[in-house]
Amino acid sequence: MAGRLLKVSSVATAVFASSGFYLYSKNLDLNDHSIIRFGRAAVTTAVISYDYLTALRDVQYGTEDYWVVKSKLHLRSAERLRDLCCANRGTFIKVGQHLGALDYLLPEEYTSTLKVLHSKAPQSSMEEIRQVIQEDLGKELGELFIQFEEKPQGAASLAQVHRAVLQDGRTVAVKVQHPKVQQQSSKDIIVMEFLVQVVHWLFPDFAFMWLVEEAKKNMPLELDFLNEGRNAEKLADMLKQFDFLKIPKIHWELSTKRILTMDFAEGGQVNDREYMSKHSINVNEISQNLGKMYSEMIFVHGFVHCDPHPGNVLVRKGPESNKTEIVLLDHGLYQVLKQDFRLNYCKLWQSLIRGDMKGIERYSRRLSAGDLYPLFACVLTGRSWKSVNDGISQSPVTQSEDVEIRTNAALYLPQISDLLNRVPRQMLLLLKTNDLLRGIETILQTRASSSSFINLSRCCTRAIARHQRGKTTSRSRRLQISLSERWALCQIGLYELMLWLRSSALARWVSHLIGCLPCPN
Image (cartoon, rainbow, N blue to C red):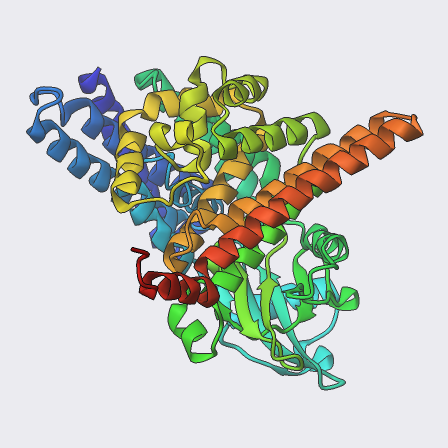
């Protein structure tokens, strides 16, 4: 098989090189042509596949040398994949960023290498930006804005954002789509689908079609900026009870499918501890409020912002209130959860918090994990099986446990791949969201804090009670459900108070005072 793959690789390389020479001689942009993009992807896939087929052939499985060689193999392959994403840009960078977020699903060599794609996104020229604005809004920049900064505030895989000033003096952020992404994305996804199928043929344990299916479904939505604006307004209304959450206002008269204009929001990235320290922002408060937001989205409403990487979550002191605020950006990627899925997910998390093993198995199976429910519980929580058995709220994550989970991600890759192909498609973006939020908590050093489980428990309790009330017409039954809900929320509140007293200065003072009392004779 390795010989056959080598021949395929040689042919692909020859086609790629000759095509590249021809197009270069014609002074054309190589990235505009599908054959060049396909050629790069095919050659990279062939080289990585050949490496995996041959690198471990002469090393005995399970030995120390085996794991060293395999780690180097993962790293080489991840770097080749990163270079491919940077070269092909657009959809390739978007998918690479998705893979880089799966900290507890893929080997660490891949996630750490692919994470840099968030800062390696391409930039469109100012001429291209002017062209998109002229085509979509029908006016020149000077007619729309009295100032438009040429250097973008940030560039992502699909678009870049410029700071501008409207004719009335208001400062806005103008998000402009890279001009060639739209026409390239559908072709890129076909290429990815073909290559993933080829790799699956070579390595039957590699079953990552779910990744292509998600890209195929979500890419058209992410490329429609009007859809992003509607998502932003829907979430702002849905979570209006949270004063700390700020979502920039959309300027619809200056927005199209390729342009989104919104209020400009100042702030530091949520992973910038130095910024938070400088502005006296409490990291525990930020972590707790993030937990509140996402628990409400996932468990109560089933409408979830699925791209909370640090560049999309800003923190600041409110310009008027001076209170800590979270600014949530980039509303292109959302997951709408079906009711049955959401309720089973609620009950699964309640079981995970309590360490209810029967409940964990029951609700994992309902979410299609089957006999892989122990692996599913570990993947979902980012915790070891021992911690899951004890109840994940009982102990914080240790460094050794985190290393164990990351190591197991490499060991159980075929089983994880099988699991991801079993579970409902809705679960895939939730797993990505979980990993991104865990990454933020790790940086803030607030991982698995009691407050996060308290907020989650409250939202699960409310969601299940609301569903039960909606199913009955009996007033007495509704009253019974409401009283049961109030009692459960009261218990959670008392538990929260107990934790606060235990950690408060008053408790430490009382404990010290009691320790100083003389012992009775």
